Image 1: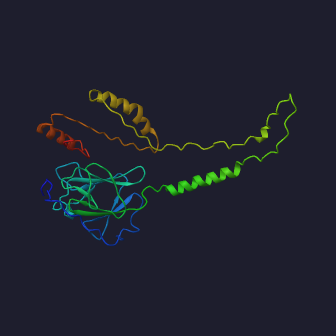
Image 2: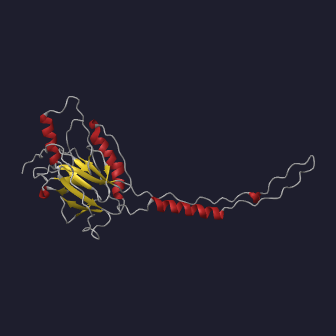
Image 3: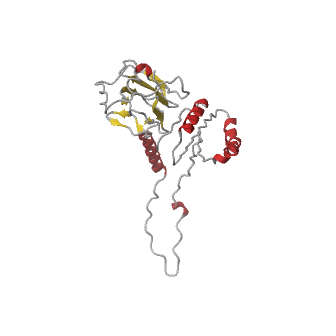
Length: 280
C-alpha cells in the first residue's frame, strides 16, 4: 500500500444524505460515545469521544496513527489522508470537526471545511473525507443542565426572593411639625430587611495554564514548572494531569530538506501524536 495519498481529480460531489435517520446505534451509545456509520455501512462503529478522535489511514512506518483507521473502508482509494480530520469536544459539550490540512478535503454536507478551523457537528450529520462518507450520531455529551433549566432556576429564585422581601406598607401622611421643631427621623422598622447572600462560589475542578518558554532556558523553566506546579497537582488524590507541549517554529527563508527529514524522524521516535510542516 502506498504511503502517499491519492489525489482526487476535480471537485467531487458529496455523498447523498440518507432519507431516514440511522437507528442501529440506539441503546448502544452512552455519554461520551458517538456512533459512526462508515462508507454507508449499516452497522455503526461505537467510539469513545472523551479524548477526541483522529480519522485517517494507519501507516506502518509512522508512530502517529489515527484513532479510526479507514483503510479497510476504502480509505486509500477514496483519497483519505493518513491524519485526515479530528473530532474534539469543547468545554460546552459541543463536538467540533477539524480538517487537518488533508489533501482532498473534509466536507460537511456540501461545504468544504477550511483547514484547522473547527466546525460544530450535529447528530445525524454526514461528513465526507475525500470521497468516503461518515455519518455521525450522538446524544447528550455533557450531561449538564440546559440553558432552559438554568433560566427556570433563576426565575424560581426571583419568585422566592420577592415572596420574602416585601415592600413596606404605606404610612399615613402626618401633619407638619410646629414651627421651630425638626421632622422626626423615620423609624428603623421601615428599613427593608434584605436577605444576606449566603451562596458560595463553586469549588473548582479543573486547572489549565499556558506559558511561553524560552528555547534557551527550556531545561530550567521546565524544571521550575515541574517543581512548583506539576508536583502539587500530582500529589492530590484523584487528580489526573495531562501535559501537552506545543512547538511553533517559523523560518522566513523556509526549512531545508535535511532539517525537515531530521525533525520528522525525531517526532516519530518521540511518539508525537501530531507534527507537520506547512507553508503558513
